[in-house]
Image (tube, rainbow over all chains, first blue to last red; front, side, top):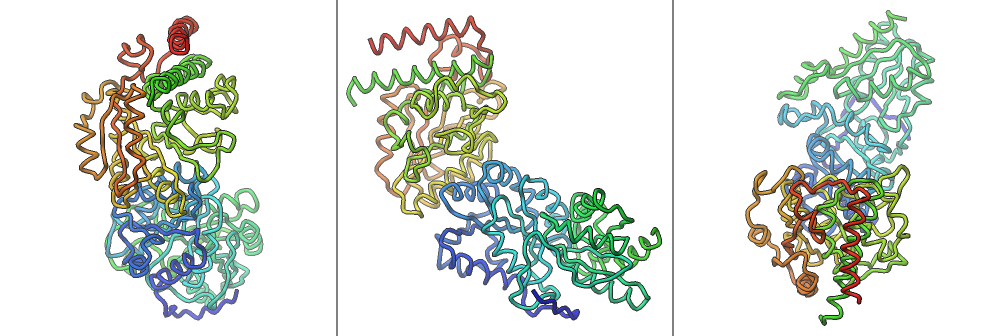
Length: 319
Length: 280
């Protein structure tokens, strides 16, 4: 793994990466199979699906059935990957994934696209702020939120072979480039992207880039902020979370999700036991989503580098 | 099918009812009505139609059963116990802490149970995935899906049936236990479904309706489903909830019922007499 962050965007859209990675997984492992709920066009898999209808199955707009069919395919010996927008991949088929999948020990990889404010112009009906919380409480589950396209490729390939329910919260647009091509990001670990001494900024997904921007700005003001990429929300890298909290004495958690049940909760659950320190969050404050551009929504819900900076200064003041 | 075989299947169905009572009596009450209504189809499936290996319950090429009305677990366990998947005495552990026989079917707990069900409607999609997956793996087996009539209230069933027809799952046989009642009472008074035969036909199934507590009629209908083709099969089983025990049949609210010592003695006495007449 190599960090190459310089603030610029990766030239690849996540949609393109998904459209290449999913077929690559299907081609390399005959036991894998991919199901979609009429959104293949949205993640670049439609062409592959047209050529390989037995490997990439469009279930139509029926997410509950898709999840159940995936469970049945697992019973027959397959390793299913299912996709829909995050809201449908979580709320719409939650009981099916939970019972037919998790409880019945039928392993399923679930891709939920357009996390949080990245749903942008699809608006509040399509904006998942709660998907992380829902999937965290499935016993034995894995919850992942890649911070860049390279991280996405690495996590998706690992997820397919893990037992249990694996939920990946994946964007479709461009993201900042964090890691060098080919980097492997092990599930269960977090990456210290930037070291620091005054505060640790824990972040996931699009908020990693915001946290790195905030840290650069804070440095100019004489504040040393560490930044940790928590792409593996569950299992969380408790060792790194604790070590960084102990080292810096304060933490800020930045997430593109509701403050309840997501990464902020996960980090605090660890620190409450291992290293209680002053903490603050940059999250959606228990609200529903709404329509707008992503940049508008990041301002509207307080999910920018400036908000992280403000919270960092406030929490350091509580030392 | 000759009369000897009909008699043998009838006797198997009586044994399933006895075993079901054994399990539910050990607890004092349970989902009796819907377990009894499927005893005859279970006898034909496990006594004639299904290609299974009792000594190797996870054999990949076996025919599989998804009992989507998972609350009929005691009826399925009764069948499996009579077949020898686990000791008969184990029926008395139903729902007790640490048991392998939970109220609703669990594929990870009970030898011979192929699918975990209980949240109604979910078994339908699992059965579709299983039938598709077995076909993709090149297996020649079939998947049998038992669905309750009340369960058909669930929208997921109809998503699954559309999927089954779209993928031409002719290795899938849907058996609808049309016993006319659900937990709160009579289906037609709660959420009328109309004709299951018409609905399933329109959804793309090769559909027939038979007397669902008549082993010969069930066997004949199941024989038809062996021919493959490009449609999934549906058999509407015209059944009586609580079938086989008159007093249970005549109880309106028989979804879950107490089985005390007195009732157990009476009902098992009746069933044993029936068994003696069949096997005389």
